[in-house]
Length: 295
Image (cartoon, rainbow, N blue to C red; front, side, top):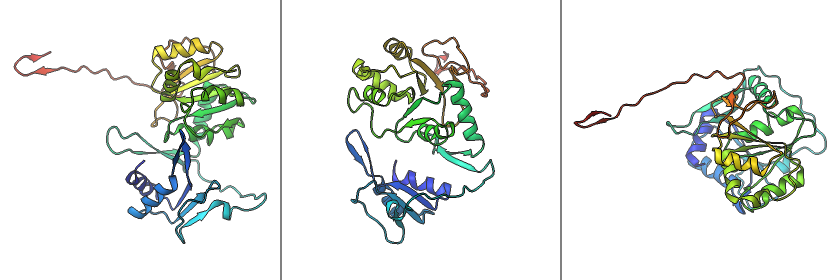
């Protein structure tokens, strides 16, 4: 994300407090997130008044006097109960931005009431989660699936969620090692991540994966060849799919195995998802070649 992109999102949202980690790690490299925030706030006018930095034990960061606070320095000691503030159901829960393929990315407002209800209904219908399930959500940087699962669904259902920092393709057997070590049973993954694992090949699936009950692909539909490969390599794991874009609260189409068995064809996103209404627009494009009319 560029400084300009971060700045206009802060301006759009009217954000007064920015919470950021000192840095993260991906494929062996540092991702210095606090530095990005510093550059943005120095270069652009934003409504941000305070920056709360989760240091993660690192001290190699710059702190601006009067603006920046280190979470570990001010966090209360012991057990502290903070009374939740009641809000109206249509108050904003989160704002996600589109990819911007048709212009400047647009912020999409999801509400406190409908958003958690919609997500929890969706994953009951797709996963039918059990109390003993361990759910791992894998996505590319900046994708909304991480907060959708780990903030608005897994805690509401009372499940165990696995949080992973890094890139599953960093080591050839990393994907399988994590599943085996933590007995992962449910995976929600971006399409690009599943393609990355397929590109590694069988090494990515070497290990005891007997706990793995279902993999849900989201984004573009898995192509038939890749879907067939996963089905063959993981015969005891259901490969589910969902055609789901940032603009939609619930999938447009999906495989609701949590509701029952449905016919599934590899390369298909499943059926029109309950709660979604689809209209199909067929377009015929006529090409004109100079001097030769329509073709």
